[in-house]
Length: 82
Image (cartoon, rainbow, N blue to C red; front, side, top):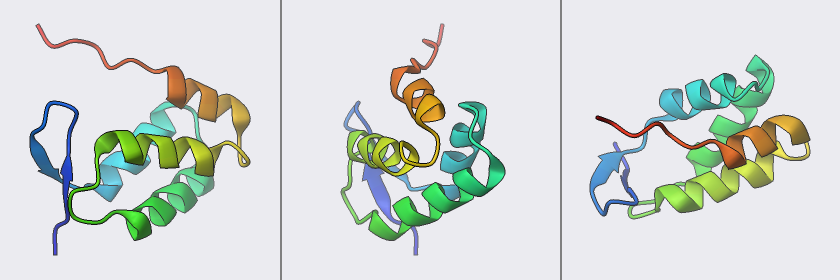
């Protein structure tokens, strides 16, 4: 069953654990850390969870594993679409 999360724009989107794991790896997380954090977050996500909540949870889970990557993830700004 696909859990719908609420994006900042208010739109709803299915939670995508592989997408979360990919974003963690792009921020510099090791494979095992990305997997561990994505698994933990996937277990917390419920219908209506916001992407901001997910972002906060990721930082909390990642910080003890790799503080530098947690900071990179925290400060990353998604490029604006043209």
